[in-house]
Image (cartoon, rainbow, N blue to C red; front, side):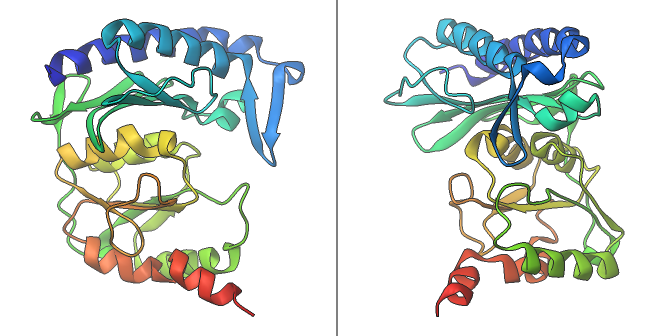
Length: 272
């Protein structure tokens, strides 16, 4: 399998779909916005973009299946499955606020082998293939060398549908406000992760993420020298709804700042 060739084709596709999304932005109005759940929106642009992505990826790797946010294909591959968010940051998109991105990752059995995140508003494409470095618009990127949380800039995503851990989440924010250079919330997890990969951020954390939010980004971080885990420092972060991504150097220290968000702790608190 030529992962680099597949990655390059996926980059072209992500850019193509990103240009479609950008061109459709001025056509968005309230009557084309649907609510999938509380504060969880979708537009015809999300759905059309996903169909375009699936159609082209089916040509690149005919035997592959799909795990896609909008569910436009339920095909499952025996070995290869694409994990797709056609428009990460839909709420930003419908309000005309950056960033929003196309996120496409390829999983071989249980490991990621290709990741592409195209942030549309700044025309920045982050990508990586197994066995190769990570890149941004053709230039090799690496994670930061920040060694202490006190000197780090951190990204997160605010809860918008699952508020059960809101109090503990706020505790982590208070702690990090006092003990870091600051916390940012852009509204696109794929973009946040890409920014960790290129060293703009030193760490990212969020709970209740879906695989399509993170698959491409975490792989790019890995190839850029970073590290990903759950809040409990296990490796089932992609489907475990807990994610911590860092430059690797400060990972162990950073976990101490978010340990109150562990699912195990949360379940213990829920018991009568």
